[in-house]
Length: 140
Image 1 (spheres, rainbow, N blue to C red):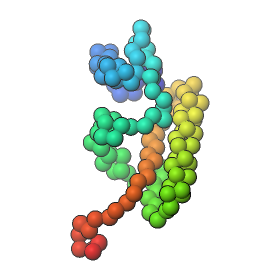
Image 2 (spheres, rainbow, N blue to C red):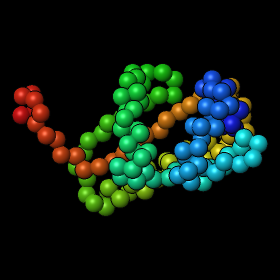
Image 3 (cartoon, rainbow, N blue to C red):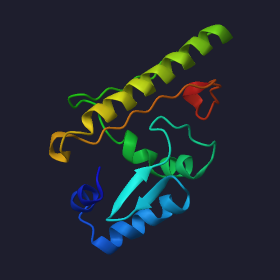
């Protein structure tokens, strides 16, 4: 989004918009440019630092992400659990990276469209070892 699109979408004043962009600029996540422009300094498919600031921000707002029935057009939620070999897990990781690149390519392609033609979309891809802990009697 452009600076003006962000300001209009989130109903922010000029000062609020600049203030909110100052922190990612200070972290070198973006570079503020003249005439209220900015440049993204990281790949759209960047990896979060474990327990870093972006991971912490997501964890603080994860309820907003999952507080959804995932029944709307274009929404889907899968939670798949299986036992996989190390080689199969690496295939899964590679496939996940490919999907992230495809998502980034689609973002780049759609960037030429106006904000009224685009909707904010979140894509969460995660895989990890799963060790269930018995937290209630029905899991024991």
